[in-house]
Length: 501
Image (cartoon, rainbow, N blue to C red; front, side):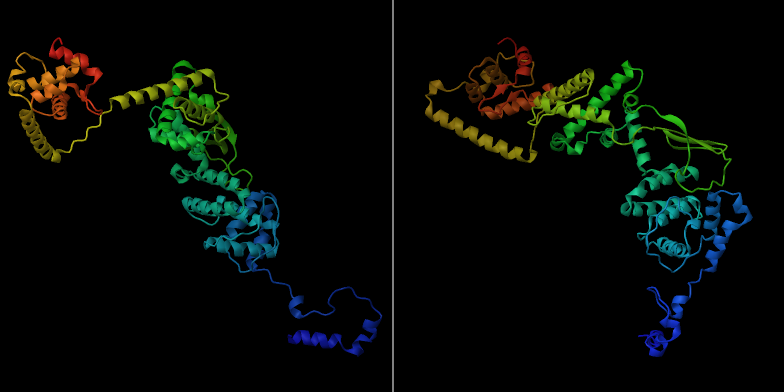
């Protein structure tokens, strides 16, 4: 126990004092009768805070605005910091220095010092709001780019702990770039600027790359592709069809409608009077300025004698419902075209748009089928050709010897030179190969033709394919099954080259 408390206890327990006239005839409420000196002494107000408060009673303050007073007091206290934390809650709208008592002011300047040092702690909401007031009024920074960086760092941090401040931070940070005429690249990551960027990609679809255009459609579509089962399984096909349908529909509106597809879905920008830093305490130090500023092609500002006007899209900047219905219709058409097991129903899509989508999807599917039929996959390992030829030669010699031993001399096949005396074809094949090809085309005994040439059927077919590849650009004999077959697309031309069969 401290000495002061011991002395108080001794005094209050003295019987003579308790029985004295000063205590005996009086009734006391529930409060200390005696207090130590530390409780009697009030905390002193720092002189800097006293001087700041006195600014509110200056002659100039009587006819100036409250925004002027806030700016003047803020500049006066710009470099001040304290060491007296305030832990109680505070409520209020449009907080300024004159609304806080001394303890609250000391708590604010203590908290602000920590924020400036990088320690952004949770605090009463009026503290956070007033700190953003300071930044937009040019208090606490000398370069506007530094001020915007401080606004972004603080705004992103407090938006996570207090989401109600996110709306103010986003609007004021954009107004900050406009008012101080910063490069538009300084706010290129702002949600409103990103939205404009995606819309511009849709508006200029003829010049937009596929990847950028699909990214813009995904970002603005009310139907989210990442939640579609079909798009997740076939992303490349889905992207290809969405882009094709969007371009086709944009062409239709360009050629047959008075306004573009984007104007039909998103409307047109409008110009209206605006107030920068709305819902804040802001002192405009340039009340009569005239200037112009462009965030992007569709978001521009003009100021004439201090009156600001903004030309932009004033509709909702969330995901677009009409674009979402279009994307869903493409998804449904894809599922129907390819027989996907999970189907979708489309609603609120005009019949002509739905017909265009289905026709585009069908054309792409048909084109893919034709490409798949004509696709030839030829894998030739040149390093293995010599060994294949040697093995084929050995097999050929063995077969010829065995047949000569088994067959009577009168039944022996005629020499190869005697086979081709009447071929006279217009193909780069030798007589034996022409005879083999004639047998295939006429349904004759191609095996005997190969034996007469002294080789195997497969080797002879490969030789013909290799010689005719430059002429047809494709394989003419298909040996994927058990028997060789002439591909039907080239049969008539081969018959013409070989003469009547």
